Image 1 (cartoon, each protein chain N blue to C red):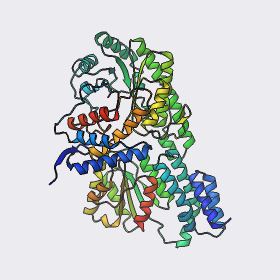
Image 2: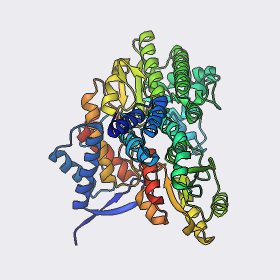
Image 3: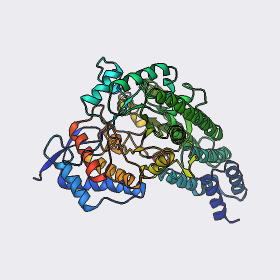
Image 4: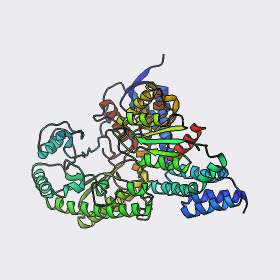
Length: 218
Length: 355
C-alpha cells in the first residue's frame, strides 16, 4: 500500500467512525515508516475536517461526530507517546487547554464535544466542568502560567456569555492575559463579541474549534 | 445623506439603516435560507414588498383588508397568570378567566388550556384537575379549546426521568446506549401524550396542540409524530396542531425515521409533509432569529424558509411568531414594530394560513 493509500485509509476510518479500524490503520502507517505528525496532519485531520464539514451541512449529527472523535482518540493513544519521542521529552505538545462552561450556565454538550476534539488533537486537558466562576478560572491560569496555555470557555446563553468579558478583564487585571490564548464558544458568541471583549478567537463548531485552537498555538 | 430607517437587531436593539443596507441584509438572509434548505430565493417583487413593509413609516403595520388570518394562541394562559420568568405578566386569574380574556378581549381564534409546567409529563399527576378545568372552559367558551403542552422529551432523562441522560452517555462514548435511552424515552412520551389526550377528549377538548415539537431533538419529533398518528386513529375528528421547536431538526439520535424519512436534519419544508402524514390538521413552522443580525436579515431568511414550508405543506401552516422566531427579535415582550412587520410579511409574502 502506498503512503497516500494509507493516509486515505486513515481519513476514511475517521469519516466512517471506524474506531478499531482507525487504531489499526495508525499502527500500519507507523510500521510503514510514516511519522506521527504525517499521520495526524495528512490523514486523521483530513478526516476530521470532512466530518466537521458534514456536521455543518447537517449531513451527520452529534452521535456521529462523537464517534469520529473517539476514532481519533484511539489513534492518538498510540501517537501521543511517539510524538513525545519525536519531539523530545521536554516538549509540551500542542499545549494545555483549560476548558469550562461559564458561571451561571450548565449547558455542556458543546463544551464536552470541544474538549474531546481538543484532546483528540493533542492538547493536554484541564476540564473544569460547568458553572465555573471567574476567580477559579484565574487561579487555574495562574497555576499553569509559563506553559503553552489555551483557555476555552463555553456559554450557551446570552446572559452567561456576558461573563466572558469579565473573564478577560480579570485575567488582564491580574497580569495573566499575556500568558494565555483565549477562545470562547457557544450559540450567542460571535466574531464581533470576541473582538469587543479582547479574546483571541471563536469557532463555528467542535471540529472548527480544534483547527482554530491549533492555529492559535502555533 | 441617505434616508435612514428605524429597525431592530435580532436582540431588539434599535438600529438605523439605509434602504441599500436593508436590501443587502434582506438578500443575505434570504441567501442563507436558500443555501441551508436548498430552497428557492424570493422573487424581486417579493423582496421589494419586504423592503416596503420594513420601511413603512407607521410604528405598527397590519395586513391588507381581506388578508386577515386566524390567530392561534399557545402557552395556555401563562401569558396572563405566569409570574416566574415564564413569559407571564403576573395578573392573578384563574385559567378560565385567562382563557376567556384571550377569546373575548384579545381576539384569539382558538385557545388552549395549558398547565403551569406546560409539558405533558407533569400533567399526568394532576390530570383530574386538568379534566375539570377543561370541562369548565368548554362550558363557558365559544372558540375551539385545545389542550396544549410541550412534548419535552428531556423530562424523561435523568435527573428528571427514568432513563439515563444521553448527554452523559455520549460523553462516555456510549453512543448505542444513548440512542437506546432516546428510543425508550420516545416510547414513554408517546404513551403519555396519548393517555393525557384520551382523558382531555373525554372532558370535551376540541383537540390538542403539540408545542415545540423536537425541542429534545429527533427523538422528541419521533415520539410526537407517533402520538399524532395514534390520536388521529383513536379520535378521527380531533383537531391536531403541531408546532415545531426550531427550524432544524437536531440529530441527537441521528438515525430515527418516520415513514422512511430520517428526521435529523429536516428543515421546515421537509418537516411539513411528515407532520401531515402523521395526521395533524395544522403545521407550525419555525425559523429562528439570529440575535447578531438585523431585522432585515432575519426577516429575509424567515420569509424564505416559511414560504417554502407553506408551498410544501399539504395542511395549513400557522407560523410560529414570537420572541426569537419568525424574524422577530429575541425579547420577552417583542416590540410591536418588529412583530407587526414580520407578521404582515409572513401573511402577504410567505402565504401562511394563520399565526
